[in-house]
Picture (cartoon, one colour):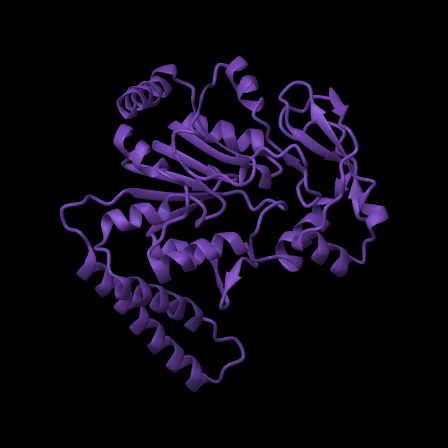
Length: 347
């Protein structure tokens, strides 16, 4: 059994879902792999229809894959988050951070960020921008710290090795870790106080997880070492953490608990930044997608929003949205008013 019914909105639990016009099915590399590995036909995929929630305005497929099939898709069939790892590799090779236009500059200017968090995927947001703030920019340093971090984590993989090989691996691991610490100490900018960083995860069947690996090293394990961040599980009891900025970069549509995740972020942070697709065409590898009208729903719930898509001056080639939200209107007004002032100056 591949499919199950999702007759209630995955975000607000409403039954008021209105069927959208039949959409043309377009193949992409995800769908090709899914069809091949699961032996699913186009005819079977056409059973998935798109509905729009009349309450919170998200788009949602019904029926869609079962949770076990979804986990198989994001762990086995396409377990590596290619775009996320590509961001990191591009950063290491060329010093380029993930492309978010002037987003980081605007947020850094207006928010005193001492504690920063992201959700589920560590290389999609601003972690690399904070890294560049805290360490001297040097290509050899980036490549050395990247290689030694990979080697440290992979050297701990000793299953099936002889006692001698395990001993040798442990010695190498200690050397790689020591090298990483020395490199960071050497290139650290002493006048900058490092930002406390967190990665919150929920181990959802909709997100890349245990097999999101590069050269046998998992993305979350790598990020915890490379960025010196703490990984916290949203499904377990967490001590109150005060976050200044919480970034959700293309991951709110990759959880079965989007309402819980966003409310957690809003309850624990002054600012929440959401970056998401808003394409009217819902690709079949996605259970749901946000829309621009989703901000109207949040506003009704007294969550204040600000669309930053134009402010960041990023060349957006596909329908995407960057918006800031907060439970406190005054925080949103700070960014909004500063951007209005900047826009008048540019004229």
